[in-house]
Structure formats: C-alpha cells, structure tokens
Image (cartoon, rainbow, N blue to C red; front, top):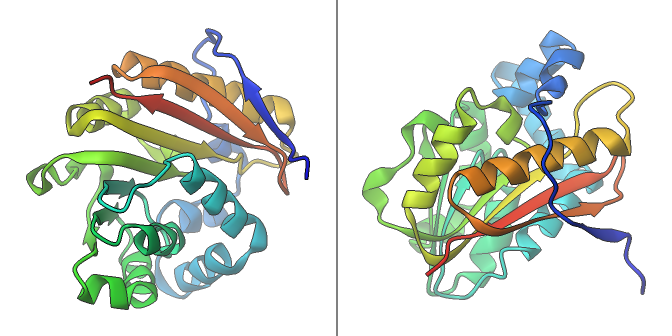
Length: 227
C-alpha cells in the first residue's frame, strides 16, 4: 500500500519559528494543550489519548526511533502516556524515562502504564524541560511529540539532550501545527526550523519526514549522535 510520506531534503530556513501555534490558538485552549490542569486538563488528556489522529501521529513518530529491546529512551512531554505505552511493549529489557510538567498528565500516564511501571520498564517524572533527569544515565533514543514549540530555550535543551545520549543515539521530534487554518507550508517551515536546531545541537544526518494527517500534515525531524 502506498503511504503518503515524503522525505524532504534539509535546507536552511530563517528564524520563522513554529511558535505560531502559540499565537494563533485561543489562550484557554492553548493553555490546556501546553500544560493541562484541572477538569479541562483531564478532558484534554482524554482527547489526546483517544483521538485517532493523535494516536496515529504518536505511532508514526515512534516508528522512526527503530527501537531495540534493550534501548534506554527519554520522552520529553509524555502527555497521557500513549507513546510511552507503545514503546514499553518493545523495551522488554530496556527502560523508558518520561518527563512532563503537568500533574494531570502524570496521573493519566501513570494509570495507562501501571503494569510497565510496576515491572520497572517505565519511570515517569513530574519535571520541566529545563530540569532534564541528568541523574538517570545516558539514553539511546529521545522522543518529543508536539511539545517542542512550547519550550523557552530549545537550543539549550537540545544541546543537553545530545550530551546525555549514547553514541549512535537517535532523536525524533514530531510537530503538527495547532493554529487556525494550518497549511502544509506551515508544517514544512516549522519542520525545517526544527531540523536546523537539531543540527546546531550537534546531531548529524538530520532529515525531515512529512506525512499527511488530519487536521494538517505532521513533520518528523530525525537526527543521530555519531559514535
């Protein structure tokens, strides 16, 4: 079956950043996407976990990690824990550490991944992206899905992630615009910006993948840490 996936060569783009998502979403909606809280946050988490396009986006992003059973994985912004659940089924002898700054998301993700947590294959932490879990060793893979545009200092965060990864490690950053009337051009520009930031952080073989998905295309930026 033919899939609607496109490999896009890396090209330099200016500083037109993907934070348009922040500007164009209504403040109330955006706040519950950026940091779900209270009843509205619980509803937002349920939607994120059950909307078919969200689940498909997570699965597509995870596929680029090319997980191995013994991998150590870091997910930044795990939300309701859907990708954590997908990854933990593969990491039979590995481990995944997830961080998120939302207590509501921590509660939902903990419930969703209770068995893997009990077995010691998953650890979920309430933490900001500025407080990466440096004391948890090095990682082989890093996953970031639709949270990159919320960071205040993305270059600094990516540099710290790169330093904490093992040689041969891989980073995958997925982004889907949260703006009114998004276009494929919005996704492409944001994706190229992320690729350039990955390269600046020291990752190599950086490239961009695009997939058509409702409500708009999804970009996956992929990079490697050379051994």
